Image 1 (cartoon, chains in turn blue, red):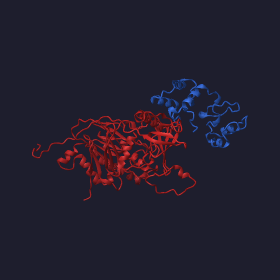
Image 2: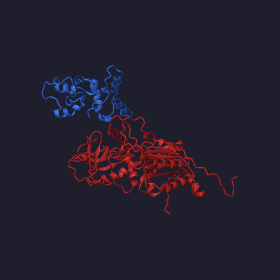
Image 3: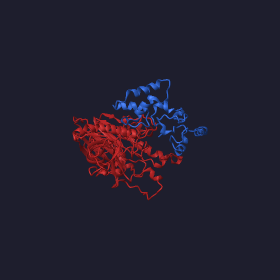
Length: 135
Length: 439
């Protein structure tokens, strides 16, 4: 939460004026959580106008245009109401819970999560649900 | 050396095989990671829905079962979901922040019902308001899962023609081969540490149960008591001590005196027979359900005995294969605040029919935010269901549609009534033990 971060955040100029949300009031309310992703409306919308240096959870640079199929599959799993709410529980834990309840969650989701745990690109944010830290 | 004319044979206390089944209420592996209560509601809905779905074909076999979002106007169908009762008088934390500051009554009414209350049914896809005269909001509370049959109206409400509760869970058969009388004694609300506590009255109870009171006949009866269950609020620690501030040395005695006094009585009891002690709302235990067992360090004397068992609230155990489930009263007291029934026993019946010990948890009753289970669900109907800290002693034998038989017991506060309860394991008959020191 250093002031340098905040100044750097506000210094960025978007190529297109008001393309993306949030409005200035919501971004000011979120400036105390400078590590949090605030470009809510641009999720999944590859937009050249979007500034590349948006910070997300864990401080990792999050280039939303490149989240790929794996993340998409994980997000679909998050949003599927059949397996219950996704907030407050980790993705793997939620998968295990769904399996224990006999709901037959998709196996490839578990493979992705287990593969991530052992893979070299251990990106810890993928284990938390889509809304982690944002709600 | 025994004088045969005096007939002094040593009486031996009867024994019963005990199995403590509190494991599902103990918080052991659970970790709080910031989760909210949506998960416990999801587990409850999933579990109860699968139970209801097995009952719906016998109830109304020809109707389709829809989700709330899948409702079509005018089409008759069945929906299954969790009930939410909207109550305008229910106290809300937001009232403190409301700018209007209208005349909020400082005196809290004991009951928050109003004629404006209405019911809403909710599942994962959405919620719908329930209309129609079939469901009287005063008999229901937030948190129970039911199936309703009806159709969506043009206003977007769901007009209820009929509803289905899960009903009493299947019951394991009680062993019928016991020929001897064995009694379980229940006492609740001792409140050691308050002015209402009468040590002589409690000592009378202790002496009676341990067999130090009365002639041979009385002792023979006492020798048939196999277990004592103390159902919550055994001591009363003044709530001022729970504020988190350091206790001044001069107040230390006020804090420890009730605990020590209780331990002295308990030691006499555990030396004579097995005792289960449950926490209540005034005991030094956690606030939210399930309350964890009172710590052994509180009972320096009694915990040395292996007959001393500290239990959770709710408490589930088995004695000679008879299933017992009970609480210290918080679940029924909360139902009393948000719904109406002719007596406390009727609230107890309802919880059994809804197959949930504490349906208002976590809405208005504090509860741990479980992620992968709801431990208050009743999977198998108990033979004895007891609730402590009530106003008076009441009991009823409830018969279920599938030959279930449950003894419901409402145990009164001992400090106010001097009444303890005795249950006969052989035939589930119940009677009161009344102690008085008024000469």
